[in-house]
Image (cartoon, rainbow, N blue to C red; front, side, top):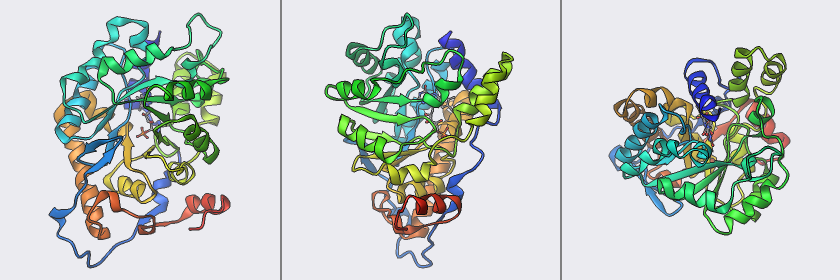
Length: 354
Ligand SMILES: Cc1cc2nc3c(=O)[nH]c(=O)nc-3n(C[C@H](O)[C@H](O)[C@H](O)COP(=O)(O)O)c2cc1C
């Protein structure tokens, strides 16, 4: 059941239009320095995140695991992350906890020297869903991390998807308490999957003890969109209607980077497509930019294809930093970007002093 769903997600995201309808990154304009006073080869993209050194502020966001073809995808992504020394997140590890035969599709990352490996389990599975599955335990989380040599465990929050998918887990009581309990024992990254993090949510997550927040906001992959296509395939009219209605639900990624700025490392994920988008995320306070959908098709092809795309994105980021007159990725500042359009309107109404 889960493995079928995982494969459907990959196939839908690779072949259908699953993007949010509005790209909030296009509201942002990086400020050009006509005389950057830099020699471009000196640009230093290295950052430190969760005490790990990355050669560029890029994270491959969690995509998959838990079905036969996932091993190849994760191997291609892990090999590229190792070659370029950037961070790598895995897809939900729930399938491997349920069936040991799926461990291989995740554990393959251990064959590579990836500087930052991020495990992945879901917040809805931390609490009772009145089904026969028991909530995940601390031991489950530890074994998920050990299986892949994870440096930190992402707990993904995906209730937009859960409300739409037919088999959705929609009891959210107690998730924050469980995150708090886990965070007292393990390094936890709180991760949205396309609907963003509000200010209060970020404050609550920080109080719960998480080590970082991946804002996973609106602008890129919409899981409401993904579920619309799954609903269509089974002729489920209610699901299709819900999917269409909630397609763009949530907090835009650039807005969420303001909202979630509560003093923890932030990963700016959701609609990052180029090195320019990554530079914009850094301007808004992200330590690194995360990307999933952008890398899916190359990941289905080969390691070489993933490396090619990532090298292009990293070069774009390097060029952007040069033209912005900034030598180090960790020194990019808020004042280096102008915010226009809908993003400005939303930030104005939230009373941010732009
Ligand atoms: C095919 C696919 C599968 C995904 N599966 C997971 C998952 O298992 N766990 C998770 O935390 N996020 C998952 N995500 C969400 C991504 O990590 C990311 O938050 C989201 O896609 C937004 O980034 P993007 O706009 O670059 O795609 C998945 C994304 C895609 C495209």
